[in-house]
Length: 160
Image (cartoon, rainbow, N blue to C red; front, top):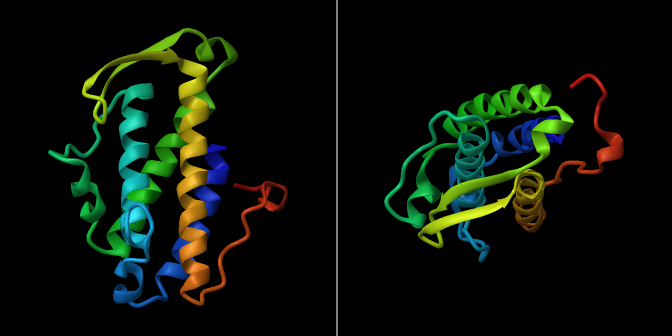
C-alpha cells in the first residue's frame, strides 16, 4: 500500500501540474473544499500518522482549517508529498508481522484526548484514509473535466 500511495500521488501530480491554480483551488463542495485543500489535508494527516508510527516531525497547526493552505502551491505540495511518500515506503519496508501487534496510544487532535487503538487497525486506517481522500480528488478532477488517473491496484506497475 505504501507503493500504491506513491503511484497514485505521482499520477495526480502529472494531472495537477497542467491545471490552473484557480481550478485546483476552486471550492468544489468537498469536505475540505478544493482539490488543493483535500490534498493538503491528506499530506498533513499522513505526516501526523507517520510521526505516531515512526517518530519524526509533522507540521504543527493551531486549528484544523490551517492544513487546507499548508502547502500554498501544487509544486510545493508535490515536493513535500514526494518526501513523505519515500518516508512511508522506508517505514513500511522495515515493518515485520510482529511490529503490527500491540496498541498505539496518541493524543487525538480532533477529540482532544488520549486514544489507545490496536496498531494494526491504525495502519489499516492510515492507508484507507489515503484512498478515501484521493477518491474525493478523483471525483473533483472528473468534475473539472480532467481525465482522472487509473486507481486499480491490479494495474500498479511492479517496478515502484
